[in-house]
Amino acid sequence: MKKQSPPRKTKRKIKTAQLKLQPYYEAIMAYDAEHLTLNQILKKIQTIGYDGSRSALRRFLDPYLAKKKAKVAQTMLYRISRARLSHWIWRGFNTLTEEQKEVLRHCQQLYPFLQPIEQLIQSYRSLFDKRDVKCLLNWMNRQLTNKNSPLYRYSIGLRLDLAAVKNAFQLPYSNGLVEGQVNRLKWLKRMMYGRAKPDLLEKRMQYRL
Image (cartoon, rainbow, N blue to C red; front, side, top):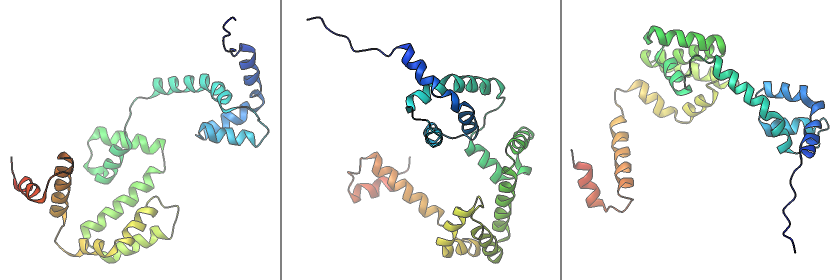
């Protein structure tokens, strides 16, 4: 008996699958402009009649996405992480270098929602400088009454630990040293694979290089 090879996908089958997507081209491009994922786009076009597969949609989008990525790479002059941008916003505009200020201004032009976020964060930070608990509570209530506020969930966390937050405002003490030692203890335990007895851990904690 001759060994039979598995059937191959012909170009005609692939082309047929791609042709099924042509009527939905404009809808697909519109959904992609909204930054929807592949699965989200698939669900959207299925509601308007598409009955093809996810892989066909992926093959249909691949050339377009490749061109889009190449175009972005050519036009992108500066790349900045969200963590660094958040750090700059927290520090405040006046503390940045001229180059950092220019980048932050450019980001605010591209993404206008950053400016109200920066104002919220700076107003929150000024409360720490003033040590004004009453103003803090008013600020927190304003965020909690607006679910669209970018700091809504953060304010929920503040409310859950409100007693500790008030103490941080009113008292000169800090638990930073204790937290640092706790983190150091956890690091030592992980370094020794959690097998150290209390007496050995005590010696390691007291040891200084």
